Every structure is written in C-alpha cells, then in structure tokens.
Image (cartoon, rainbow, N blue to C red):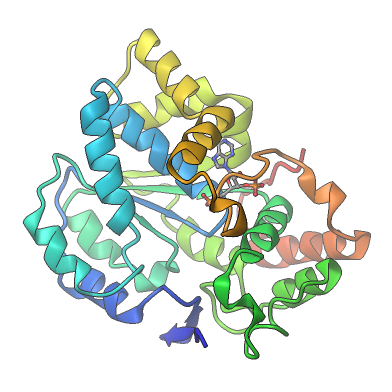
Length: 294
Ligand code: A3P
C-alpha cells in the first residue's frame, strides 16, 4: 500500500517525500534567478509553470523542450526521491523553475528571500478546487487500497464530505486543508519578490495576468510574444499538447480536465457549498481575499 507521510504534523500524499522536502529546506542552493511556484493542488499550478516556461524559453522551441522536460521531472521540491538533488547539481539551467505544494512552514522562505529568488503563488476558488481534486484523485493508483478506500470514496457526495473534513492527507494538518494553507502563504502577499495570482483572473484576462508574470520575472514581452504565450498556454493548446506526449493518459490522473470557472455548480450539494462559504469566512475572513465563483 502507498502510505502517506507526515512532516511536522502536515500530512502529505504518497509520492511527496519529507526527505526531499528537508534537503530542499536545508541544503539546496538557491540563487536570484530562481523562481518558485507554490500552490495548493488543482489551483492552476501546471498552467502557471507552463506560462513561466513559455515566457523564459518560448522564443526558442528547442530550449523550451529541453528545459521544460528536465524541469517537469524534478521541479516539485518535495516530489520523488532525495537522489534527484544529486542529479540537479549536475545539470545547469539558465534559470531554475521550481514548484511546491508544501505548506508555507515547510518551505525555507528565509533562504529564498535572502538569495533574491522570486515566489509566485496561485489561488483558485475552493469550490472548483474541490471538484478538480475529486476528479484528479480518481486517477490515484492507490485509491482502491484498504487504507485509502474510505478516505477517497467513489461516491461523489461522500468524497467531498471526507475532503472538506480534512481527512485526506492533502498537504495540511489533520482536520485542515486548502484554506489553512492559503492563510499561511498569504502572509507573504505584500513581500518583495512575491506575486500572488488568481486562477479566475487568469481565465478572464490572460493577457493582463501573463504580462504581469513576465514583468515580475524580469522578462517583459513584446505584444507579439505576449500573444504567442497566451495562445500556447490556453487550455485548448495545453490539453492538445499533453495528448501528444501522453496519448493514453486517460486512465491516470488528469491534469487537463475542463479548465473552467463554476463547474462546482454541477457537483457540490447546497450544504457542501455552504460549508465552504462558512469555512472561508472563519479561516480567511480577516484577509482581503474574495474568491471568484463564476
Ligand atoms: P479542472 O479539473 O477544473 O479542469 P493543477 O495544475 O494545480 O493540478 O491544476 C489543475 C487544474 O487546472 C485543472 O482544473 C486543469 O484543467 C486546470 N488547467 C490546466 N491548464 C489550464 C489552462 N491552460 N487554462 C485553464 N485551466 C487549466
């Protein structure tokens, strides 16, 4: 059975390794051209990573392919075995792009900041996040094991009940989840070298948000380049591209499902939606976050 692991009370899904997270925290070298994309799962991580890759390397398809392939193998700080850090040292990237789903206390933000690296954090409304999560979790190879079956129920309503009660080892402490993670990261909202993005704003106005990202990482784009990045990172283009490289991925976990705002209306019960509203008030009520639900 694939068993989850814990790190300082935070519960991580199988595949996410405390040992690797620790090496990232204690030993990994960071420099000022590095970019860390942090997020909770299913909030648009893959999208933001692709936008950053397109901005950095989009003018040169060979570079884009080379660097995005390499980085996709390794780029979640805490994902996979610790030996990847040995491999990392041997490959030189012009600019390193990392991602992480770790909660803020498990990422060495002091080091990232002291070294001048940049952080991008993306949030999405918690109702669409939950729906995306459920569809993604259907692809987990371990979902049918004795341990996981009750935690990842097949029944849709039950699934959301377990998830919203914070019982799925989803990068948070027992009983907690996405909203608590946002709260911890949100402390950095106004820090230097930090950019907060909103999935729904990227959907509604990709030109605007992609321009923001490009300026933030110090690689402003011409109008033509901007249009090109918008085109290459649209949901349709990215989905099509992913089908080329993994044509029979339909059984596994899906990174490109619908890419829409408001699909939660087709999946959550009224009670579940109201529970989320209450939790948002309770946990994020003292921040200025206003989620966009449609
Ligand atoms: P849905 O399941 O709602 O479709 P992550 O990369 O953090 O795992 O997030 C995955 C979610 O982002 C999925 O949501 C996926 O479809 C959506 N997504 C991926 N690429 C996208 C794009 N280019 N535009 C809009 N949404 C995208």
